[in-house]
Length: 129
Length: 129
DNA sequence: CGCTTATTGATATTCTTTATCAATAAGCGT
DNA sequence: ACGCTTATTGATAAAGAATATCAATAAGCG
Image (cartoon, rainbow over all chains, first blue to last red):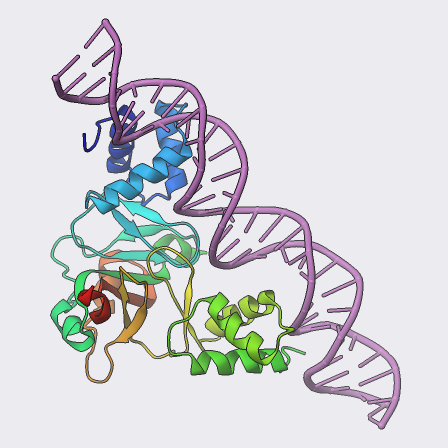
């Protein structure tokens, strides 16, 4: 028996799909706990890691602090606000990130599996203050 | 008196300049401690953060685990090996990363200050095994 | 309906980084 | 060269995030 389909995993996956805020593991836990108060934080961490490994989610590593998770598995990049810490998608629609994996592979000798592109800046809201 | 020129800071800066392995704060501490065993880990953390803030070093955030520091402050990107965790520079010399900050700014409304491009893959050594 | 065992929940533990605070020393004026 | 002020250090506690451990639970097979 390779793997089992548990309620916990289904709820976590669904919550992550609904959260478009690039939540931390703890934030996913908060959302899941609304629906299933008995869930353990360890289960959330385990399940999120499993989803990342299965390619069903993406781990977004931004600056310092906790890791964040993205329900979108298709290639796209992120902006994070250095003031408030918010993370958003960029490259929505027609904007291609222009990253040349082949060139990186050639230059490094690595077999390139993926890449992450993160912009740091100040979000529109924080530009006001 | 704005800031002081201390031996500790000089040793840390010099060690970081000599380490081209994108060391973690702890690895920098190990190197510095060779030369000044009485140094505190807190001082290493503090000084590295100060250097990053001053633009004299770069914090490289790669996958999970500890943060890494780069003596190079000029814009370039990184490859990390998903097997052994090693981090190396790419984009050495003529390879430009082709990232379009203006487009990201236009698409997001953010004021873009910097960007990080990290490739994940398998390094030549790990490809053997 | 049992049985096996993957998964869970609760908690301890590890690991990384920051906070605290008395002691030290950098660098100014004299 | 000598104090004086206070930025910086060293040692350690504390915070925070993620993983490890392990008995209890439940998924899904026959």
